[in-house]
Image (tube, rainbow, N blue to C red):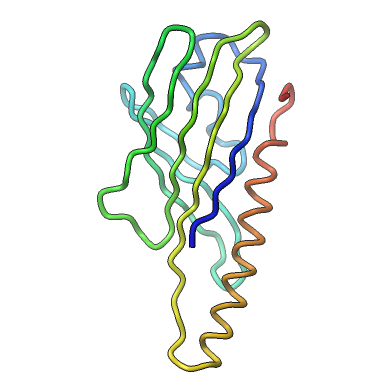
Length: 148
């Protein structure tokens, strides 16, 4: 299953934060840990899902600076777990802050039941999981003051 959400944010951040997304997004829902080494951004998203509890979705992206803008490229994980994410987009320094255009893709491999009861439970779990992740992704665009 793949869930995708694109959104725009305008944040009142200093221009130098364009290339320091870990300063802007770390610790703000749904982001958990977020670190940067040179141009590589790594971290995970956190979501609660019935039957699964708290799930971490690791991701890795590369920052491509382009003057007063930057592009964020999703990097495939070498050995992706059952739950993982891709984060890509762009950012631009504008008057009074930074504009971000981001796309987040959540990948989830849910266990399949072997009999009809297990398959039915799997479909219910998948629907509940999808609703919860959609709710978390929707909150992301509302998480910061000063957004557009």
